[in-house]
Length: 566
Image (cartoon, rainbow, N blue to C red; front, side, top):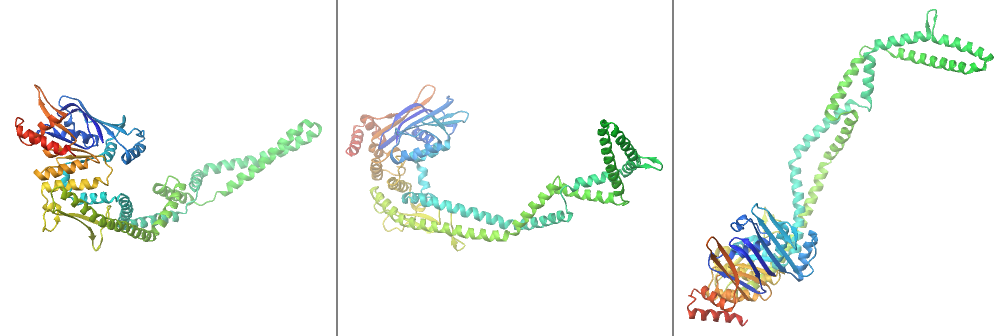
């Protein structure tokens, strides 16, 4: 419940501290006094949209703070949020919610002093307070809202969660199936491209390291004359020309001479060995150079073929990778992709089977939800009719139709199942029930909404209910019955009600008067908890009589006393 409410610089309110009570709390005041400001302030704590227009004229920021007493199931649900958000658990049953608005449009939200987001505030508010205004009467006529109320009464939360999960899975597969169908032409085009690329690379018969080898061969062929000249000179120098001895013959002679001398001077043996090694290396070099010389053929087209091959390789590298290794990697990837696309029909068949299975699972949960709704609809209708009888509508009938939606001869499955819900209403005996939105008057809608909320309050664990002018369109006996019902609802809940009805104001355990005062330079709104004399004066005003009218005050006192006996 809301134990305390602090409002600073909100609209006409400069500063206000309210202590609220258990049971029914009523707020009354002249038209234009600012009765809605209190509810707007509570709405800010619930995460409602904030406008800088709410900030009092001349102020740069506004503040709303609420102290909530929470216990039981609500405390457990609030602490679940605290765990999710990394906040300290509430152990003393007190939760302080603060929201500040700034002219810049910035808003700062806190829960027990810790900064939170507006969305977090909204999630918390859904667990603390339920607000109902005149727009809820219009919402009551919407099929989606009627379905929500039915599911709330039936406690279908777990089934609905399963339904949403199954529908989400099925929808995801359905989108995949549709995208796959639309991409079929693209798949064929991609296969054609891959086949061309793979064939082009395979036809080239690339080998790792080939490009480097070809560049070396090209360089060799481009400088053939220079290389051959060097080889010829080197070979002649080693082997000699005509009668001139070459390096090899000279080394042989030198080796022999030093070997003979070493027989007489052992210190020359090392030199003899070195000369012998030089002789061997020179002989090997001569044979290598001769082979290299002989390897040069007279094929004039070889260089052209190498150039053509390098052009082919560079063309593939421009398309598929910077090097031959990159091109070969691209080839492997292309083969794998082609294989995956060629297996597409098998994949599509599997996807179709998954789609059918997912739909069947969705329909199964939807049918279970349908059966549950049909059973609950009868119980909810009976419970609401019982309350309507207490609200001076003895002949009222309300029926809840739950029908399965169809599309193209199949069940139309959605995230909330396969059902459409219609609330049928008849205010008078002998009239056939018709859709609520077609026949109910404003007063009938007000009482129907109250009846629904009274019934749902028994199954919901919310502690605070707020009604903004639930008495709209009713007066007299009907207003009196609404007052009794609200007071009864206050036995199990904190009920906050902004009203023009003297009966509802009299039925409250706490009555607050909202007054507007015009000062020299500005206007302010104040809220005062009325004592008994104050309540009598305010009730007399609501009854439409002059405060000086003793009869009116007597009537007001009698009205108040009639509820105090409860």
